[in-house]
Each structure stands twice: as structure tokens, then as C-alpha cells.
Amino acid sequence: MEAKVFFTSMRIRNRESLLDRLENLVKTAGLEQIDFQNKFVAIKVHFGEPGNLAYLRPNYARRMVSVIKSLGGNPFLSDCNTLYVGRRKNALEHLSVAMENGYNYFQTDCHVIIGDGLRGTDEALIDINGEFVKQAKVGRAFADSDIIISMNHVKGHGLAGFGGALKNLGMGCASRAGKHEMHSSGKPFINSQKCRSCLSCLKNCAVKAISLRDGKAWIDHNLCVGCGRCIGVCNFDAVQVDWNESSVKMNQKIAEYALAVVKGKPHFHINFVIDVSPDCDCVASNNVPIVNNIGFLASFDPVALDQAASDLINQAPMINDYPSNHQDHFQSLNPYTSWAAGLSHGEKIGLGSRTYQLIEVK
Ligand code: SF4
Ligand code: SF4
Image 1: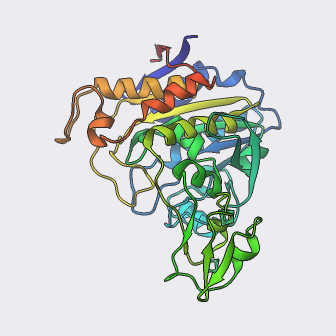
Image 2: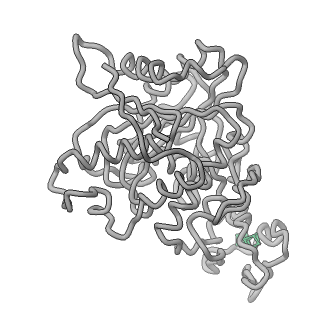
């Protein structure tokens, strides 16, 4: 079925604020149809890895917070911890980063909650019985919320190819163990150079797959079930991941996780096609954009939203001397990625539609 995607460009008239444009867009797209009264509303954003300046300005979040509060909702801003070792891998560091990058109460009029808790292990298991994922491991704060709103900075991605609504929902709302499930078809292993023999991982492995060998932790892969729990409990980044999942399968798993995140809840999504950097906001830097700023898109359908955003980007000329095959800018940048596989799978499992009607809002 054809989904509706609402779009507004960034070309303004009469010194109109882009924040007013955003509010008009989401209201025209039907946000007010959701019953927000007394509901906990998780607003999924990416706070940006320190050093990256392409992440979404908190000003956009503040306006969405204001709109949701005016509709009676109780919003909070949230993201889950990262699987990779950076400055957002536990809640303390992650909150510091959010604060540094302007995602704090003073700037946004809204509290920040790290979705999967202190160590990235606070998760809810959501049954979806998918082709690849049977039970999704979703950050508890997202699972406990009544309504999901995603604010997605659209950009390229070294592994997924394209980062939009599905990536922000599926990968972003997963606990660290959930992220492991999407990134790896294998099992974690111990870097013995980093292991301090604290035994924390041994105590937390439910199937007793970890033991000491020559004084260092060691995982018996015959016993390990790949749950990823040991990754979060190690304070020394010694439990490591084989990032070996293919781009096709990872994108398909992302779609299944995205379905789990919104399952049974009202949800609404906004794609910001601005500062379209070639890499994810997880990278501690950002290169010049691949296309000029295009605008904001909003929809109840995250698949249609990503399809529309990628179509608009691929119809625009690449700038800044990036190589292009003139069909798919994201594949030109990362030839081994297969981002469209996630959209196809998302459509197949009922998350949304790749067919859409683009409605311009002026
Ligand atoms: S939790 Fe980390 S440091 Fe402690 S024993 Fe396990 S791998 Fe080693
Ligand atoms: S991934 Fe899970 S089962 Fe495997 S060693 Fe770690 S905690 Fe144990």
C-alpha cells in the first residue's frame, strides 16, 4: 500500500524559521492524530560522537519536545550505548557526551535517558519471530515507553551503506547485546592483552562458557550462545566482537529490530536530509556533505521515509568531488554495502512500504 511521506525543503520565504517549518511539517503529516495525553514518549536521537559536527542540532529536538508537551505527552530524549569502544559505550560517558553536544535539560527542556542503562545491559526481550531475529534485545527505556518518535539524521554508513530511520530505530534502540546480534554472526572473544582477570564476565555468563586460561578469561565457543552479555560487563574493553556480518544480512536484521522497537505502539518518524555526510555520526569527525541540503521528511511509515530520503538524495548531484555511479550515491561511497536490502526486508515483514506518495508542504 502506498504510504504518505510529507516533505519540506530548506528554501525559506520571508525569514521564516526552519523550526517553524519543522513544526508545520509534523503537524501536517498527522502527528497530532497520536493520543499523547500522559504518555511516556521516547524521542530517539543520536547525540553524536565527540568530534563529529554533522549530528542533529539539539534545537530541532527542543521544538519537538515543545510540540509533544503541548499535546499532553511526557517526552524524553534517548539513545542506547554503542557496541564499539568510543565515548558512548556506557551511560556515564554517554550522558557526558550528550551534555557536551547540547542534549541536556537546559538546551532541550527535556531529560535524557540512556535507553539500555549503565552498561548497555538493561534490555527487554521482544518476541518478533523474524527470519533472523527471534527475540530482539531492545533498550528498556524504549520498550517501556508508550510512543516512539524517531528524529533521524540521514547520512552514509560504512557498514550499512545508508543511515536513516531504520538504522536509527533498529540499531540505535538495541542494547549492546542486540547490536552484537546485528553486527556479528559469530561469538565474542577475549583480547588477553586487555583482560585484567577481574572475573566479571565469568560471573555474568549464564551458560558458563567463560573460564580462565593462563590467568586470562577465555570463551568456549562450543558453549557460548552469543548473547553478548559479557561485552557490557567488562570494564576494560577486553571482550571483543568479530564484525563479520554481511551488509545484506545486517540491514535485514536492522529492519527486524526496528519492527520490534515500534511493535504495538504509536510511532512517527522524521528524516533530516541535511549535512549528508558520507559516514555515520558515530565517527568522531565528519567530511563535507555528499549533496546539498535537501530538507525534512515526516511519515508514520519508516520504510517509506527512508525510501523517499534516499530517492531525493540519489536524484541530486553529488558535490565535493565524491565519486558517483549516478544511480546510487551510497553504493558509490561504500560499494560493498547493500542498504536497500533493509528496506526490502522491512516491506516484507510489514514494517512499511517502499511505495510512497511524496506530499510537499510549503
Ligand atoms: S570482564 Fe574483562 S577484564 Fe574481567 S575477566 Fe572478563 S574479559 Fe577479563
Ligand atoms: S556471549 Fe553470552 S554466552 Fe557467550 S560468553 Fe558472552 S555471556 Fe557467555
